[in-house]
Amino acid sequence: MKSNLIRHIAVALDCSPHSIASLTAAAELARRMHADLTGIFVEDINLLRMAELPCSHEIRIYNAEPEKIELLQLERSLRLQAKEAKSALQRIAEEFMVEHTFRVYRGLVPAEIILAAHEADLLVLGRSGRSPSCRKGLGSTARKALAEGKRPLLFMRTGFAAQEWPVLVLYDGSTGSQQALKTALNLAQPGITLNVLILGETPEEALRMERELSVTIALPDTVIEYHHLPLHDGKTLAQYIRMADSGLLVLSDRMKLPTETVHTLINEIDYPVLLV
Image 1 (cartoon, rainbow, N blue to C red):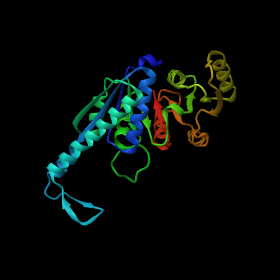
Image 2: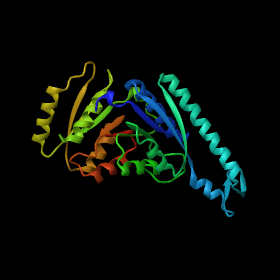
Image 3: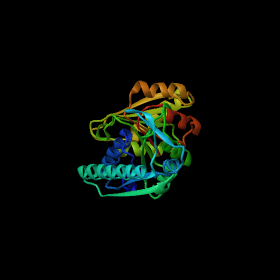
């Protein structure tokens, strides 16, 4: 995947910290790839339906007494959130000097975001959203996008700056990993290390793949480091990624690794992930 194939980037917005991190990363990538940027905000139909129920109440931290959820008040709150999301999009898009549009939909949040981003070349999502949850891993929208097969997908989290990302790409010689490697090469920045983690059936196969790549890959001002791990050791793979403290993990679920293993890895590691 070469950068000129990314002409339209969609980003899901809900004003949560992960959402703002996604927006900043999406704008940086749009600038780098000369792509248009679309911000998507969804008014949650489930919240609106809940507000119509006579038994629906909420408890605020400053008031111990439950308060009735008013539909009109909830609609005003959603409009305010949409206004804040649009303002954030305009501010960050102008900072990175990229063309941008903003769209508001009403419906089930995961489904509407995926449908709205259908024509985008890349969908950027926060690893989790605004909704409070004790659950670790991906939020509901990110999980649905992963299951639906929308590609490419960038799962972002706070604390990472796109222009400073070190990049770690998984490579096993498969078509999917070749696509991941091409993407990683497009994202590599001067002065930033590109780590290629080669997953081989045997140590000899891993060494052969490294030799082949070292002959064909050359990036000026970019350090490329090769590392080897056994192909079928998913637990060790997750441990290595955490130990390496990579900035962005680039991989495919069309590798020799089982798709379930790849999806579990994406869900468990708390790093930005680009799935191609």
